[in-house]
Length: 486
Image 1 (cartoon, rainbow, N blue to C red):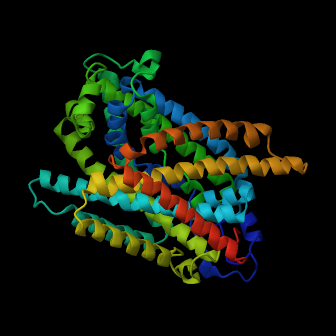
Image 2: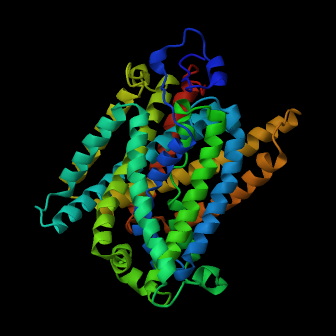
């Protein structure tokens, strides 16, 4: 296939390449299972989740029963992953969800969702710059340094991210690995100390108490828990930079999801235990941002608190870097599918990175950050929440469409008498995952105004935007016969 990106060390992928394939349209890397897991888990921002969505889930959701909701969310995404990885051998490119959707629902539909994916991940990447800027501003101010505007810190972060995005993915992997180890280590240290010493009321039992699990608003809790898994599509996005992708991608997908699910479940339980079952909800409602720092200072002392404050900022940086790499590879791949100008599909001669696509992503982010600064948007309640709302809806729609595509693809294979995948992987697990995802989507729509800062116009605008970009992508594919999924 012309312009097909080669996977390093993958003989089967190489066999699909024509002998004269342009090497400057290939990405190269040596990502193994753990390298991809680092990228995925970093995108999930473990410390950021424990300090952000978890307190909100406790306060607005089902309180001490929240850890059980993480278990339920993990089960849903694992059922989805069974079908997702079953289809992986039939999708020999790095297009990720939209290529999977195209396999089952057709080329035009696939490219419609390609645009939905691109906008969703770009929106989340841009939005997190608001959190990064605010976090860095608060961090340095707490040490008595000048109170510099959040936008300045966001722009400094953008410069570093763009520089790393210009280089080979292996450099980003190394940076993400170091940052990820630091943030996971401090949270696990807190978990261990809390588990050994117990909390003011002993160990929390809410997550195994049925009445606590269904108390309050478990639907809201499910929403916050599910948001914590966003980004695991990266296992497929980095296909061309993985060693033996047919094995690496499925293993990395399941390993990342299991690690994320276990980490969030245990850490949420420890955070609740640290405050006590009878006190944690009131504390979370009063000040959700103080839940993690307060517990850390209590159990790990002032030194632990300072470490958490620093790693919280680096966690957000790692999240941005991960999504920057995802967006750049979407632009790169779509350019080689003849959707965008061919120049964006050029790989760097020395770094074998999507440097031009990475640069374009940096320019788009720069425009939005500067615009947010110019109109005086609050970096968290407006800049981040509005963009995160767009991303949340878009990504859940992508997961649902991918589940439907998996079922449709294997149904067609079965009708043709060519079904080589067990029924469990082809139909049963994807169907269960689809039901769970549909339930999550209903909850998201019901609570979308609150998710985007209480603004109904923004909520409606987010949905309309996604519909429009789907139409644009589908329209381009319908009008250009040369636009292909492979």
